[in-house]
Image 1: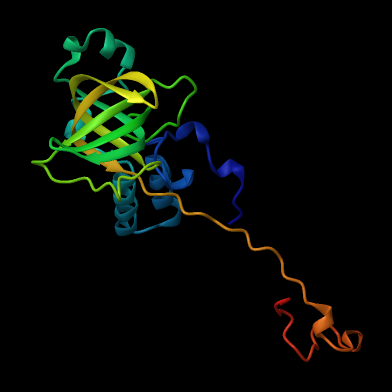
Image 2: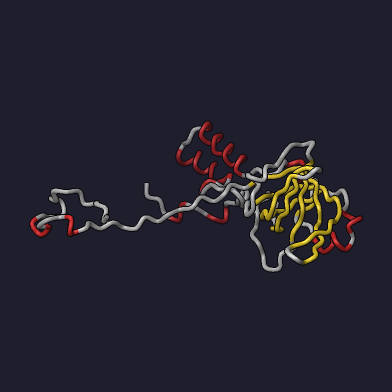
Length: 225
């Protein structure tokens, strides 16, 4: 069977979730039904695909917290009328500046980053809302500063407690403070290194002109030192 673009009608497919990490081919219910009809894949395989879809689309914070929370609070509004929002649950992202263990618990200072409806970070925008403090009460445990270290990314669901004065360098600053109800620490990105091509050191090969590329008496790869 020859597959062409005529085999697929994009207008008949609709995405389940914009956040899924699967290729687009597997992101639609109708596409899966089409595979069953045309290719005869067993229901077990389809069930496995749907399971992967379900877990790949789960929010990073507990669903019950996400459903009852307000995404991406306006720091300006919180500072202007803190009493109006005290006790409400907000979900926001951040890049950790510092983590301290205090008498109250683990206190994170972070730069605000907006999140989407699943809790994924959307990136630092110009003119950020600023910084906030997130307190993890000592009765709940410890957020180790060695793990929650500077430049790590987090998503926080927290109850707004009020405002707290502090300093950024020598500048006075007023922080919104949240009591952590749920927190997700994002994995650190792994560096990828491009390996440059390695060429044979000709001076390591006596009479190199007497041998073809596949007939060297020595391995092609040799260090130059």
